[in-house]
Image 1 (cartoon, rainbow, N blue to C red):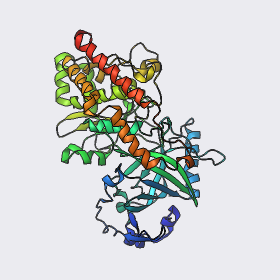
Image 2 (image 1 turned 30 degrees about the vertical axis):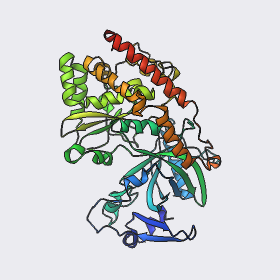
Image 3 (image 1 turned 120 degrees about the vertical axis):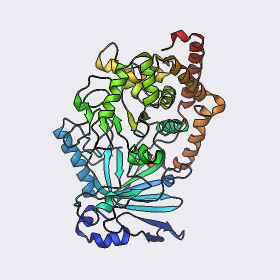
Length: 501
C-alpha cells in the first residue's frame, strides 16, 4: 500500500510517470487469485491541469453485478482519523463532524477485474448519525464514510503533482459517499429504492448502488457489510445532467443546522446562508456548494423573498417562470409514498436547491432517505404508522413539535399546494405512481430489485460487522397500505375539491 508517509518521502515525479498518482487497473488472468497483470496509466503532462477520469460512472453504478470496495489504511492514519474526531468533539461540545481526511488506498473489485486507486482521502460523514470509528478499546463502530479522489494533503500548490491530483476523477466522480444500513433495514433498499424511484419519475436525484465494504487496517481486513454508495450532489452531478451554462449555477445543501430549519421562510439570520467552515464549526442552513468565490447569494435571497411575499396570481406566475414546478410536484408525490418525515415538507430539512442560470429557474433535489418505506424514524408525534393515513394536503410537520409552536411555515410547499392548478397536477402524479400497471410504486417493482440484490450480496453477511441477512420485513404491507390509503384520499378529494389544500 502506498501510504501517506511514502508519498511524502518518495520521489513523486517518478511515481507520477508510472501511474499519474491516479489509478492502476489490475486484471486477473484467472489462473489464481494472485496472478494479476498491472496496467499503468500515464501521468498528466506537467502544467496541463487537465481533468481525466479513470473508469466509467456506469461501471460503479451497475446494479447487475456484485461489487466489493476495500479501503486500505495504515494503523497510524486510522488512529489519527479517530483522534481528530475526539479532538474536535472536545473543542465543540461533543460534535464529531471534524471532516478531516487521512490517506488510504481503495481497491474496487467487480467481474471485469480490479481497480486500485492510490492516495485517496478517507473521512467519516453524517450529520446526527456520525459516531467515532472505534471505541476506547479499539472495537470498530459502523460508520458512514466519504472517499475523495482529489485530496492533495500536504502537497503545495506549486508541486508538480498538485494539479494532477486535484483534477483527478475516478468513475467520473470527485468523491463517493458510503452509508451503512443504520436503521437495520433487512431489505437494504429503503434509500436506494427511494432515490431510484425519484429518478424513474423524472426527479433529478443521486444515483446509488450497493457494495460490500471492507476496511483493511494495517494487515487486518474487516468486513463491514453491505453499504450504499452514492453519487454526491456536486459540480460533477450537474455536468452529467446539464450542459454549458446550465451546469454553472449556485447549488445549496439545505439542512437543519445551527441557525434552525431550512424552511425557506424569511427572517433567518444572515449567517444562515453561507459556506460552511468546519475548523470554525460554522454550518449554515443554506450551504453553498458551487461558485464559492463568485456568488453573493443574491439569487437565493431574491427567490426566498419572492416565494414569501408574492400572493395569488403573482405568486403562481413567479413559480411558473422561476421554479421547476412540475419536478417539484413529482418530488412531493413521491415523497408522500416514501413517507420520509425528515424531508423539506416534513421537517424543513435534507434537500438541495439549484439555480439554473441559463433559464433562471430553481429546482429541488431530494436527499437522505434512510428514514423511508416504513423503516427508521417514524416522525412521532407529527406522524404515526409511518405516514400511512397522513393527509396528502395536511401533511405532518415535525418542526412545530420541535420548536414548540402551533404552526411553522414551509412556504414553498404550503403556498404551492394552495394553488388549484397545482393541486390537480399533484394528484395526477400520485395516481400515476400507484397505478399497478405503471410498475413504479408497487410491491412487484420493489420485489424485483430486492431479489436481484439479495442474490448478489446476501452470502457472507453472517461474518459482517453488522451481521444482518437480507429479509423482506413488512415492506409489502407498507407499500400496499400506502397505495390503498392514497387511492382512498384521491377519490375523496376529487369528490370534494373544495376541501383540498
